[in-house]
Length: 151
Length: 151
DNA sequence: TTTAATTCGGATAAATTTGTCCGAATTAAA
DNA sequence: TTTAATTCGGACAAATTTATCCGAATTAAA
Ligand code: SF4
Ligand code: SF4
Image (cartoon, rainbow over the protein chains, first blue to last red):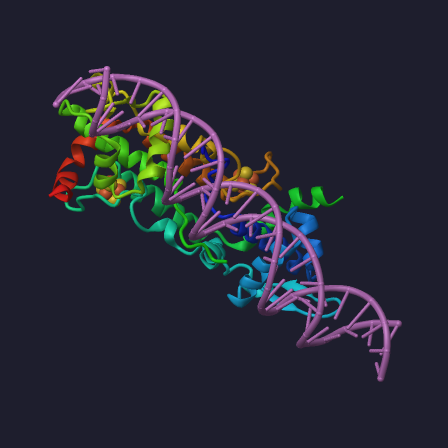
């Protein structure tokens, strides 16, 4: 009954974020990341992650290349302009920003409840954070941690 | 694949919050709220809401009374001291405050990524907001909206 | 040209969350 | 004491999310 876990984003989205960060890292190094690479690196289920990557490829956030030496990549020059918000949006949509944070339907919009302002503030901070955080920042700042995990 | 809805809390929790606000309102008026009352008022599935209410009763957030004229109630003097956080905690736990907001396992805690501070800030604001918002505030401020819906 | 490495896409399965059904227990009122 | 209104609790069902399987398509390299 009581939830196991309440996370900000779906599992798909979490895997997506992690995967894209890893792909970005590799791409900065002129390398592609194969599905196997990725799932080994970010510790996620292979087939499920494949679906997530397909979706990100359809959304043009990453590029996929079939065949030997294929894999996923991101154009180097795009890595700085791609923001976290785009990944989240492609996988979870933007519903986290919409509607009452308490899930209330019953609400007098003219006289908002005491929580309303704080809620909208929190959500808009979340949005700003996602919109202002580039893949580049994440890829470079997390590089140490990731490379550590690799060996 | 793409999520229908990403909400801050589970459905159970949303119903719980709405139900408790309604019960508080009634209790302030010396009345009990029956399950039927509640689900009619907050527009939620009856049997499911019953489970949620049971859980809240077990957590001593509300009191349940069986038999004719039974229902759910909250001691008047408690309404001001019960905070939103208690309801959320009873139904969704506190996992929304824990772990990486991006769902990353791979993380070098010594050199947090650029998002870390903003994330912890956002979460702590959410927590503070939930901890500082009493049922009384909500019940009284939402009264207009709720009574409007009733007729 | 053949082989092998890879992504793609559809079908399906497992897990979790959300929702329903129904009889048992309790209790106030008739 | 009987009845009826109510919550309780267990079993079950539906919907959604998460995860797996496998063959098809693509393509680089042998
Ligand atoms: S005023 Fe309160 S109840 Fe209404 S949408 Fe804002 S937070 Fe939700
Ligand atoms: S530093 Fe970044 S990756 Fe690590 S826990 Fe904080 S937000 Fe998550």
